[in-house]
Image (cartoon, one colour):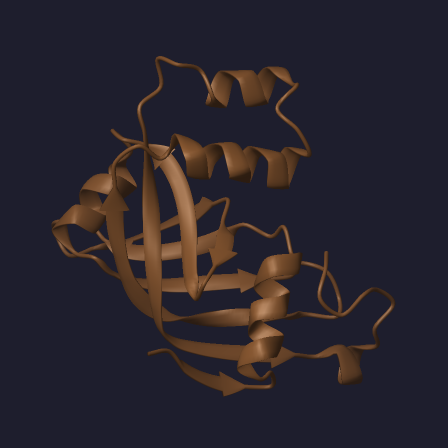
Length: 153
């Protein structure tokens, strides 16, 4: 069960995560205990955040060693708003379905050289499934002005 705190209700957080196409910043630990930060495309489904990456990516090894993560999904433009929190990551085989959805979400379709490269048959992809434990939301729209839709970037 996720603990929601901050400016938004649970429904507001879910709307933000469904409607934004902002990558997640995922913080984890390397096997030596030092910190590691990676940015990945993300989708939100049924209370879970999902990413995809190559099976041999460093972050996959790090998460298998220590599945506890920190996360951030936030805007880079004024007014600043977003979420940060903690959770647990699980690596799942066959990340191609998640990757295909992410490609369509972030690129708009699968008809580009980048999309074709990412979805190539010879690439082994895994899914990273993140169960949030705590989510803290913030929204500085009132104090910074809001020239855009409050939940999209």
